[in-house]
Image (tube, rainbow, N blue to C red; front, side, top):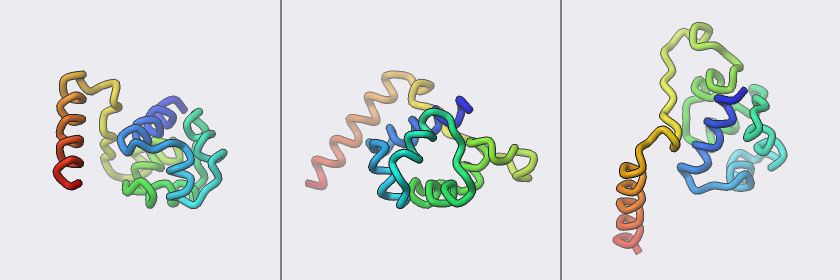
Length: 106
């Protein structure tokens, strides 16, 4: 599922994580996360682990990955836009804000 692969890429990019970082945080094999980045959906156990590691609702993971439809979930699930959907100037501003925050906290 293409939406799932894009979602995973976005979640990793927003955190500055690589596959191994999410795998470690979710206590999963890196090969599992690698498959997700190529569109293979998680099973329920791995979806729970990913939601916990990413700090996102399990329902969001299940809908985006295709394990459930929004109608099956019985709720409106909004997925944040992918990085490619955000204008360059907003991305640059966010990077500046984060770098400044990091420098201020150092």
